[in-house]
Image (cartoon, rainbow, N blue to C red):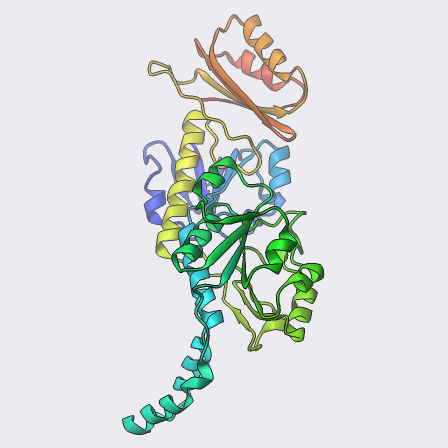
Length: 393
């Protein structure tokens, strides 16, 4: 029975998808085989020997020591796209807040004396409303940087709002390309997209290649009066270059889900307390996806939406007996599969079906057998150099 330890509050709609008779789930679960987390910061010291998987109910995994997990054969899952609609809707809110005098208008109304009579208050509103005049977003150009699950939804939303939409993503997958509306103009050069956008919305993960991506050079390429929206990650924007762009007026408005002390109180900055995925629906979607991925992994060895292992799924035969599937992770070096199969052959264990995939320095194998392997066979495979973990399913 897999032991699943939970951190943070995980939506009940997700937790109830664990088969109650086969899984032990809770915050106090000991000897965890898997961790189910949201924002909880995991330290490397928390990676127990029993741990086989970590599922993050969200897209980012910056709170997980992924390289250390990979070294120990721990599969790290995330839930890309589960919170995409929630973030998309907040981007739309950010676009409108940046274009109209909504927030200062609300502050102005709430600052009035409550003892004023209705006629006096109405007259004052009519006199002062011109202070909060803004612009419509229809007809403006929206540049979307990153065209994955969220970025493609933002692009589609922009089109539906009457905006001209263009996008940039050097690592656009085939799946993402199919999701992208055909009217989105693709740019191969980020500087060109930046220079031709009224609004720029960021939807990238934090990688070495994206850290401080929006730097002094790119701010200089922007049109005077550009608005930048960052609902991706704080580290993507160079903080010093951002302040300089705001002070010069080249950047008209910065809207972000990541407050910084130096930006607090500025009239040209709108920051929110990291609420992009803070909807009931998004939390439920993330929990359901994370739990389903863990159940499929522990029941069948299948991997979906891993950030450090290859995605791999092998259908089981309808009459397959329990304990006849091996899940093996190993270093991605030559002759590994041959050594594993040699052990099985030496033990007279027939292979019915198998699947092998690699990702960077790690490889993963699912092998269906005609009969249950002996402990001696499992131990022999485990003792092969560069084999990380062997599990009988």
